[in-house]
Image 1 (cartoon, rainbow, N blue to C red):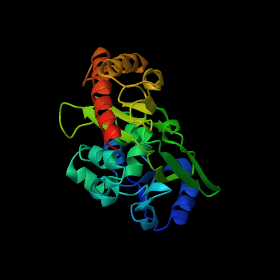
Image 2 (tube, rainbow, N blue to C red):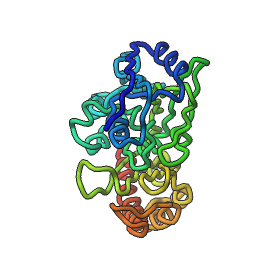
Image 3 (cartoon, rainbow, N blue to C red):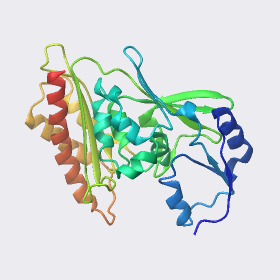
Image 4 (cartoon, rainbow, N blue to C red):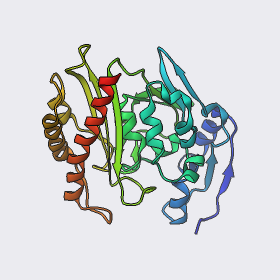
Length: 291
């Protein structure tokens, strides 16, 4: 049962940051509430103040620029990202990822920023954003700062947000020429969290034959979303083949640090990483060759 709390609903970012600074550890921030309300019902979180930022319209937007890339406000809903025509211009993998995130009801209300700040290693957006070399922008009363998305996650449900800070924007650069990106996850129930999720981005050289750069990101394979950097090195500077992708998958499975739970054993998750890295890598490669 949820304990009583005082509900605050600021309408501007400055007002929200002022309240967050005032109430500190006695408060929690809620966007869509798809994750926080569950924790409150379970009695794991019992804030004295609940600061709802859902009504801050200045954090709800999707903008794209040919030079600067994609900018997504932290309060943009998953459904808005899924349906935005902006995603067709180099960011289609984001929209495709969103189609498998939970249910339509959840996507209609849940926000991209809330998902990231919840810090669940099985979340769908983080591996995709890592593969796309995204940056997260945060704000506090003392100013703004930014960091690569892969540095944002510190441990299970723990992020690099400092006290008094809010995530305000996700920034995704324009993909280089000859780049393809893909994501998939394995889950038993279609709308459930990933048992393992894999995102791969591959950039080929101008001839279209050799891998110039690659990112392999894993979800639900460690305490945080992670890069499989040793696996990436297997592919860089080489002409990618099925055999090479299989080798990358094998190495990625050793870089993963999965745990056993009610969904899958550690060994099963490692096997999923091995299979999915090869599968998603082939899809990303096909996209890079067509780009």
